[in-house]
Amino acid sequence: MYLTLPRLELGASFIASLEEGFSFGDGKTRTALEIAAIEAGLEPYLALLNAQGGTVTLPNGTEVERAPHSQLWLTDGTEFLGVFSIRYRLSARMRFRGGHIGYAVRPARHGQGLATVGLRLMLEHARAAGIGRVIITCADTNFASIKVIERNGGQLETVLPDPEQDGLFRRYWIESASS
Image (cartoon, rainbow, N blue to C red; front, side, top):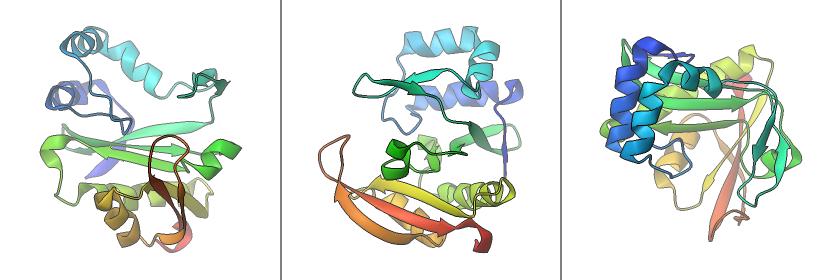
């Protein structure tokens, strides 16, 4: 298994994951019509995934500058297994809730340790990019992510009210240099 930039030869497997109900960690599954549009325009869609610059609209409707980032796909041969994203620079908002790394594994491959492996690989990427101390956050009820983060050396900093949804979220630090 390895992390790679999104690429066309993984397209069929990526589309199959969307049909399974894969979401990018935002909890939003794509409709059949949206999936068909992605498939029809796969090459430009993949180019957009790692587009730099521009703005992004926050859940509250505020438009902010897009931070430098990469979205890497966890793959095994030509099978798309999941998405691992990294922000190389954090805004105040992302430093508080969001962090450097986010990830999601395709539904058909949940419970197989892929998130643990993918996060380990992403921590190596962070170290190579000069990020020595990584912030990762997750919902306090996301027990799978809690295990993944803690298995990768995550040290719980605090549990706070979640400004984006009801409930609490956890803030972790991981020293990427020692992962």
